[in-house]
Length: 126
Image 1 (spheres, one colour):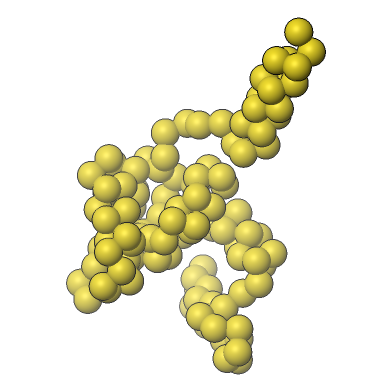
Image 2 (cartoon, rainbow, N blue to C red):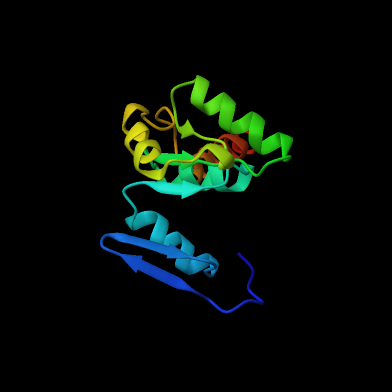
């Protein structure tokens, strides 16, 4: 979406489709979501990892080779289901996300940062 356009949210049952949200709103929505439907850009994928999301439907932007590669790669690894934009069938595709388990367990950014600083400081304190 674009922040210059009016913010449009469509609700249908348990679904909410939002054209654009702030960074804070996005974090809150992604935290609450059982399944995230998103583009497969690097930053979005890192957000999924940091939040520990295990279900997502990745939809690469046509012609964006990095997104196309990342969505293919993560699907091959069994981490997230992906589907091309022109072949979407949301009911079937969302059901397919249940067969994927998200990223393997990994430390969160804060834990890695603390470990990095501890290791760096240990070298100076010896």
